[in-house]
Length: 250
Image 1 (spheres, rainbow, N blue to C red):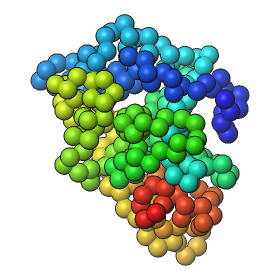
Image 2: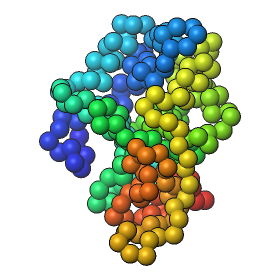
Image 3: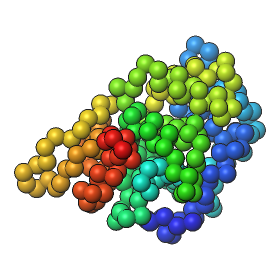
């Protein structure tokens, strides 16, 4: 498959990996720190160690970098790319649209980490508005969990862990473990929770154009800290993105 900016890289559609019994343990377990019950275990996600190891090897394949597409409203897609360079591993998260000249940067996990990349409001809206006409992941629970690693929001509601716990159960995690695992996943070890707000008035000179409707983040390491999510887009494109993200009513 081809994605702008990755023309020379061995990308491969990764959506089929999600059905592997060890996938979610391999994809999310690193986010779970130890608690009073001990270190994270693959059983927390309904998988055994062998299945999780096999899924991890697929996620880290240097010959076929897995790509997960999460299509949502208005032709937009959130995209997850496993950047599997032997000496520079990482996972990239971004937003694309066929009419844009470049990608909207959400976050990076790995040696050059940057984030958070999504507010709770955006994460939930994207998860629940699949575009079934576009290729990719359409199940809302899988969509939520795929994008969960880039969440960082100090305004997440009290019931956020319950929403994540339900998603975990729907993808195979044991009911008895889901609430605890969801609470651990909300405490992302890569960055602190941040505050999200609408941008202020555009600068009078020298700072480019700031369009309304797209949240910005106060996290110092976030690609969205004082920066438009999709730079270079037109006001009309920004309005469509704001509606697709749920920050403006459809």
